[in-house]
Length: 284
Image (cartoon, rainbow, N blue to C red):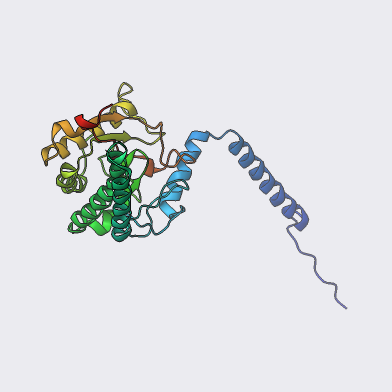
């Protein structure tokens, strides 16, 4: 029988090639571990925030507020805004009025009770009017996620926020986009009819650096808030109705667990819940 011919040419054994591949993979693995161990945490959070926005990794819920849509950013401690049922409100007002009549003129708490009743009613009316005004805008479907309304102890807070790749203001600029300007213009007549004073606050997100080191988030947030005031004033809100214009930079993020998220950039327009002036005849 003829012998089988041995393969010519030689070369490394198969086990050595496999071992070399294994060593190469281990080297890559340890290089990655070292790279992650010296990662810039701030840059990593910026990248993580961008990835969340790109892939939609964030909490969503259907809110009852300005416009009922999916995707409005929420916080665990943000209030769900609902209208006060008119029939219950009226019954409550009548009951308080009847009780006050029974107490006699010497009790001076009637005005306070009346104010407590009227505030929710006024805010509910304002919310309904704002919804109606904004829904007349043809682009409202696209920008509805940028509008958040919540009622707090301070008053009715209307926020215009950045999210889903749609900004309210131009990048690094105090000037809003035309859509934002129209939103504010629609708000102005409703706000002007309210008895409440108005406080406007600007917020920026963390991690953004300006080309000019002397121009900080404090400057940008303040100027954006003031431009919002100017637009409201231009479309009917009188000067004396404004209480304050404030810039808070990135000190009060909407999402404290992710200060780099775009939704932290926002303008807050607060209709302040304040006690009405005491009539002269009721002063102590």
